[in-house]
Image (tube, rainbow, N blue to C red; front, side, top):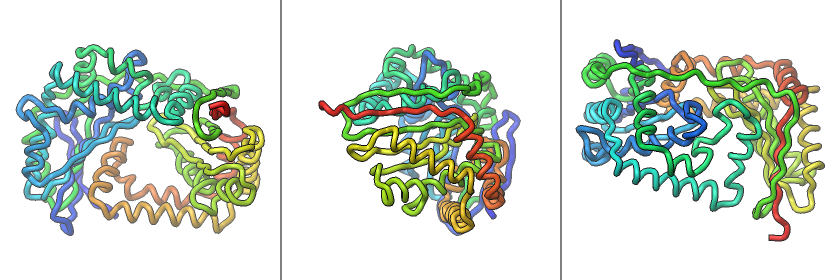
Length: 413
C-alpha cells in the first residue's frame, strides 16, 4: 500500500505527497495534461518541442540546471500522446529549490526567439535521426496514420512532418504554452523524506499565486473502423516487417486490463504463444511482439514481427491469426494466466521501490481521475477471468477489422 495525502490549491493545482522516510531524497514530479493529442493538425510536435523549451530558462532563472546541480539535484522529462512529465530528484533538505524552479517555469517561461530557434534545431535533428536516417524510421508515421483517420493519435509524438517544427511561428508556440501550462492542468507529486503539511505549505507559497487559465479544446474522437485497411511500402531495410493493428478501449476501461493480460499471454517472454510458435516451433520471424498502447483515449492493440528470409507476409499473418483465434476460442491455461498475473504484480512491486516511479505513477493515476489506482489497479488485473479474455480477444481481434502494414525490404538494395 502506497500511502499519500492530497490537497488542491484554489487555482486548481492538485498536490499529492507520499512520505517515505527510508530515503534521504525527495522527488518532485510535475505532470501536465498535454501531449500530442492536444496539438493542431497543422502544428504537430509542439508538445515535445515545449518539453525541450522548459529547460531553457524562465524570467527569474536564466539557467535551469545550474541551481539544481548546486543543490545536488538532477532532472529529466518525457512527452507522450497524453501527458508531458517533468521530474526532479534532490536531497530532501533542498526540496524548496525544486519548487522554486518548477513554479517559475510554470508561471513565466522565457520563450525567447533565440531559445526557440536553438531548440527547434535540436528537435529537427532528433526527428531526422529517429525518423529519416535509420531503418524503419517512418513506421510509426505509417502505422499511426493507417489506424487513425480523425483523432490526433494519427501522428506520432515527434510530429507529423519536420516542417511543422521548422516553420511553426513563435507566437503559436507561446500560445500553446499559455494554453496548457497552467496549474489547473497540472498535478504536482512529492515523494520522499518530507513532511506532507510542509509540502502543502510550500506548494501554496510557490504555486498559489499562479493564475488558472487552462482552456483545453475537445479532442475529436475516432469513429468506429468498419472495414479492413491495408498498406504496403518498400524501403531500403534489412528485413520485411508485418504489423497488425486493432482498435481497443481507453485506459479507464476494464477492457484495457483484460487486453494487457491477453497480449502478455501472446508475447511476453520466450514461452509466450507467438514467440514460441513463430521463433521456435515454426520459425517464421526473428522477433514478434504484441502489446497495447494504453492511451487516455481509445488506443490500439499492435502485433509487430520481423520476418525471416523467404517467409511471405501471407503465411506469417495466417499463423498469427491462428494463435489469436486459439486464445479467443480456448482461452489461456490456468498456468499461463497465473504466470502473467504474478509477473504483473512483481513488476509493480519492484517499481514501487523507486521514488521516481512512485511519484510518476501517482501523478499519472491522478490524471486518470484517481491517484489511489496505484493501490487498487492490481486487484483489477488479478480479477480478470479467462472468459473475459476469450470474449474480449474475440471481439477486438477477430470480429473487428484490422489495419495491416506490410513493410517490405527492397530486395534490389
